[in-house]
Image 1 (cartoon, one colour):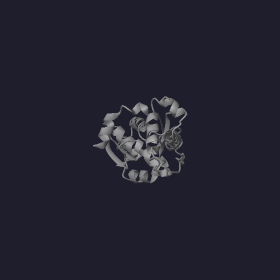
Image 2: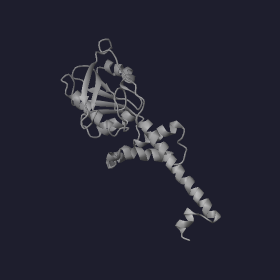
Image 3: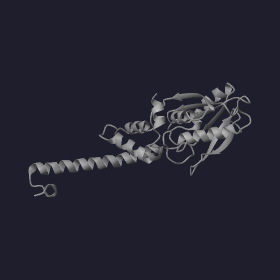
Image 4: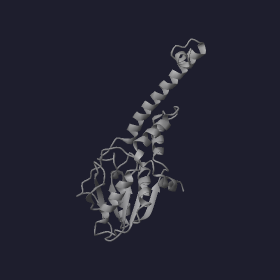
Amino acid sequence: MSIVDELRYPTRWYMKLSVIVLTFVVFMVLATAAIAGVLTYWIVKPQRTSSEISMASFPGRPDEVEFTVPGVKQGERKGWFFPGLRGAPTIILCHGYQSSRGELLTLVSALQDHQYNVFVFDFTAHGANDGTTTFGYHEAAEVRAAVDAIAQRTDIDATRFGLWGYNLGAYAALREAEKDNRVRALVLDSVYDLPKQMVKIGVEKTGVGGFPLMVWSAQTTFEWLNHQYKGDRRFRRSCRN
């Protein structure tokens, strides 16, 4: 009797046990992959909170600025520009994961009091913007589009920008600052080496991170969804240095 036939119709006790164990392992792997896929979707598409203020009544005399992220289907963005001293540098604040521009208004006021121009906006999948987050891969292009839009103003110094970011925003700001000479200052809080590390944190928060292969499956799913950034090795090494 061939091995295949023995696996299909086991007659020996150890082969029966092997088939049971193999079936259980396959089921667990498939179940883990399915759960990890659902978790990854929840993680990259967080619950959004919209931040709306009255421009007429809000302190700081903000202007609403609209800009477009090139190459994105739903790339229209809106941000708030808070003017400081005319001709002064501009600081762009990049919010964190599951946050929004509205949560940065206290920091905006503090920076504006020091005569800086300040700009805040919401990333993809945050605020009023639909889509899924890439934890900094694509968001760096949004930071670049914001810098380009503000640089067109005549009341600022278009050659001097500062970027402030927290986790998601920190990674996107760092990714943009590496390529943009207009960025003269960089303040980062809780920046990570690779975006998939945020997926690991998200899975662990659900309480199932201890299950075998769960974190790995979720991170693999995330990297598959963002396969176009797979070749971006140079930036990954620079983040570790």
